[in-house]
Length: 224
Image (tube, rainbow, N blue to C red):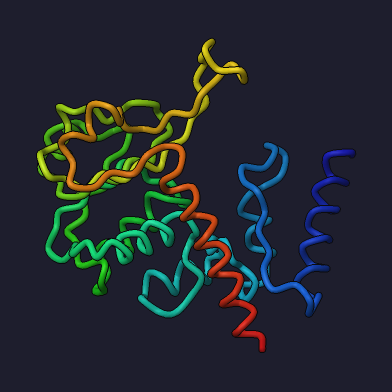
């Protein structure tokens, strides 16, 4: 009963915020506890306040290339590519990971008829058999699978653009906290081969926050 009560309390709060004219954006930190459906919660959010870009309406509009809220991490990556004037047209992009939060929307944005975009995109996942060979063909690698140091130097061709989305706590006795943050890319050994590469921390993370704020500002402008 307590679990049912907490779920109802969360949904009631979202509905309350949906109807609050002073609220421009709503996001719910995922993943949720197992007894609460991520899908049910996301679907309850008003699409006009879906600044996380996860509502089916937002996703559908993104797939069709229509104006919408784009998921914050992929949006931040696209803003970064645009800022550094990386011409992605005609590039082969390999996206490692197929989550609804990063991998799938990233593949859609990179293949879109836009700038940045216009890539030929390959999506790799846990069942991909020839991942190393595919990565070696890539002009752009987006690593978003949550496995520290997964992308190694022998998987990256010279001059590639490598975007590391992963961020995992690993034990480190030399740190006061007892841990350090590692990305999905073996940065130290991969970086010398790259034309561009994002660090962890300090790379994609801040861009995710910037994109989320940009979505929220857009929501405010739409309302007013």
